[in-house]
Each structure stands twice: as C-alpha cells, then as structure tokens.
Length: 399
Image (cartoon, rainbow, N blue to C red; front, top):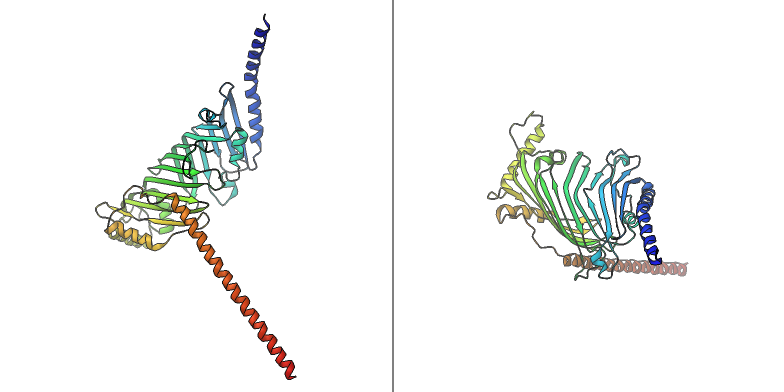
C-alpha cells in the first residue's frame, strides 16, 4: 500500500473516530456547563455534530429553576441548530446563527421567590457564548410557545402566546446598513385563550447594554371578557362582550423613549340588566350602568368603537403621559374622526434622539438654575457674615 494511501486512510479513520467520540465529549461539556447556573440548572439529552459544515444540533434542552414551585421548566427546546453563517463568512466575518424549533418558555410572576420564574437571574449572553463560542449574527425561533403565569398577580391572570415565531438578523452588524438601527427584528404569535394575534416589527441596535430601537406592535381582537378579572379588580365592572385591539409605536435612544399606545374597543357592552347568577353588588350594578352610559356617549356610533391615543415620553425608569391628550383622543374618535386599526406612522427614531436632546437641554437649564441658586445662597451667607462682623466691631467699639 502506498504511503499517500495510508495517510488518506489514517485521516479518514481519524475523522470517523472523532465523529463518533466528539458528540459524547460535547454532551458532557454542555451538561457540566449547565449543571450549576446559580438558581437554575440545565440538561441536554443528546448532541449531533456535523464536522464538515461546522455545525451541531442540541436535542431536548431543558432549563429549570432549582427549588422552585413551578413544575414546567423555564425553557424547553426539542431541537436547536447552531452553525456558522456561511454568507457572512464570505464577507470576511466568522459569526454563527441559532435556530430553535418548537421552544417553550414558561414565565411565572410572583412576589414569592419560589413561585417566581422569569430567568432574569441568568446571564443568557454568556450562556449562548459558552454553547457556541463564536459571535451570533442571526437568531430564529419557530412554532414556539410562551406562557405568562400570573402576569397580573393580583388577579392571577395568565396569558399564552402560541405559534410564536421570532427572527433577529444582523446582530453583529456584519451587513453594512445605513442608519443607527441595522438589526431587523420580527415576531408573530397567536393568543388563542384571548382570541387575538400579535405582530411585532422593529429596527434595533443591539451592541449596547440597553439597545436602541424603533418598533411597531399590534395586538388584534383580544376578547374583552377575558379581561374581566382585571376589570372587576380595578374598575368594579365586567364586560359582556366586545374586542380590544392595541397599536403602538415606540422609539428609544440611550434609554430615552417616545411613542404611544392606541387602544380601540369595538362592540363593547358592559351593562346587562340581569347577569347569570346575579351575584354582583349594588355598587357594581350602578358602576356598570354609568360606564355603559359613558360608553354610549363617547363611542363613535358609525364604527361602534371607543378609542384614544395615549402618548408616552420619558426614560425606561420613568415613563410619563398626560391626561388631557387621552381625553382629547377619546372625544376626537367619537365626534371628529374615528381612529383606524393601523399605525399612525408618527414616531421615528429621530424623535427619540430629539427627546434625548430635549432632556439634556432641560437638565442643563436645571443645573444652571441650581448653580445660580447656590451662588445666591453663598452671596446671602457672605452678606450675613459681613453684617455679623460689622455688628461685632460696633459692639467692641461701644464697649
């Protein structure tokens, strides 16, 4: 046998052995990596590796909270594909992409730490880096499910988002694009328990701790009767029928945001003379009667809808809105022109930049006023000390 043939044969055998043994070592590495993640732990059932394409597949990934009361794992992913993004490699960038199939996320909200499961304690960026030690440029999820348990803890209201799909592209800004938001993000999902659909589209800049963004979000045709627990708790009313749709545009730059929410209710009925069981209180009876009367006055009769526009402005920690624009919005919808179930297209990323500039200018004027006030205080203190010294010298002279 020729020497070259022996070398080729040896390489082939080495590759076969590596192909057989490598998944075992990678599986051990991943399970050891996720065994201790603070208050969470993780486990992988199997790993499949493709040496030629430089990719591998993780099967049956589960991440759960340790010593928690939630039975469902925080994250369950039957299949995750991790690979090199070849089209970026041809552009001179070694980056990867992640595709997750039928993932399930189970959030639980509670003041009780054992009954809470939000994943905020985990450094997800570090975990992904450890699993795939190259930078991620694309992330996608298909046919997912997101459960929000006790979303409003006071009423134990749950929300489930199904057929969830998400795609984030150009995370590492491999593709050179004009503008400050080079990473497109899209997401869709159904809200079957509430009868609605969700659509989300955004441009983002993700290479900073608090990303900049400009998004459009819509929630269509949510059933108002599904909000009755909240309505009874906070408004002392409940709904008999109707739907609500919410449209929102928001832009944020360096933590300063500007935007709006536009809720539109259609075919809404609050008051019913006799309810099944008739267990409502007298207070709720008259509250619902007044609410129904107000609805009839303030709704757009042609469209049979009550709607308004809620402007938002401020920072992530302190978002502000004003009452008068909301009231004017209700009156405008009722008597001037009905709001439409679409985006107003009035919010741009430039608005968030201008918001930051206005905040900077306002803070600068505030600091200027504070410095002036301190100067006046010091001036008064010096004047008072001079008067005191003058009085002291006068007393000494008289004595």
